[in-house]
Amino acid sequence: QVQLVESGGGLVQAGGSLRLSCAVSGSIFSINTMCWYRQAPGKQRELVALFTSGGSTNFADSVKGRFTISRDNAKNTVNLQMNSLKPEDTGVYYCNVGGHDSDLLFVDYWGQGTQVTVSS
Image (tube, rainbow, N blue to C red; front, side):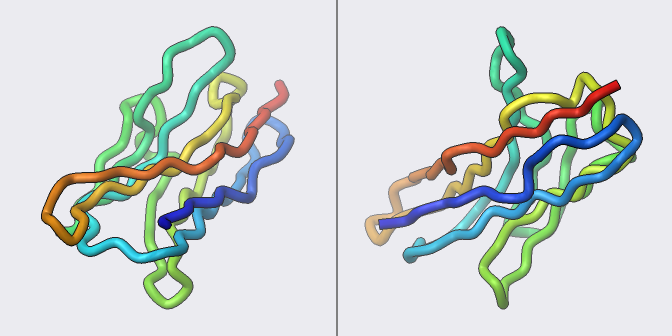
């Protein structure tokens, strides 16, 4: 089965940086999207960054210019580089990978999440 494991979260001062990694194991027939979500305490989960199979990226307005998303095919990881972190970036960050199975049905997978805490 496909499994996603996030790492790289932690505590950082405002203005600092963190690099999150999502290790993907198992096989997916075809990956269409790779993205990062986050959920702050008491708030709804939101899409932070998106990476498509075509190589395009998209970011939430709140993180544009500060976050970048990338993939490393050799290491089979999806990464999120977070710079100039703000306290409002605090939350649990989740990796999500979506694609198609062998029957060409769309499926997606979630990681367990990693905590990011930005102190002011």
